[in-house]
Image (cartoon, rainbow, N blue to C red; front, side, top):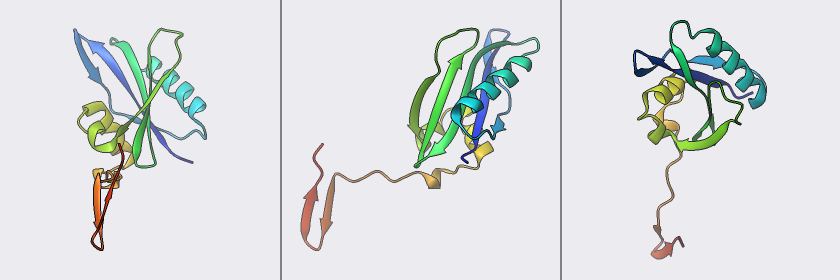
Amino acid sequence: MTPFASVALYERNGDIVFKPPRKELPSDKTQARKSAMRFWQNRAGDDTLVTVILAREFAGRLEISERAAGTRRPWLEFSRDIEAARREPHLAACMAELGITPAQAVTPMPDVLEINGVIYRREI
């Protein structure tokens, strides 16, 4: 079972802020999304919930699902490199909650390799 981490973006006094992430342990993505949405909607208080984000590490990348609050639209899904996701504070907080380090990122494949004097080029 791959753990998920969720975080919510709130609007407070015209600024976008987030509260510390929470680990989600349901067995599938759908249940994790429902649990995260319910939890963060109940934690809004005086703030206005803007977006709920669910993240997990899969195959060396960060899989992200996000949904705007108050809409019936489907969740948006995309993935990011761990190094690129680390630059966004709310995603970095989710990675810390899950215990993901940049060292776990898959190194990119080089365009040119030389093995025993033979040069191999990757077609792009």
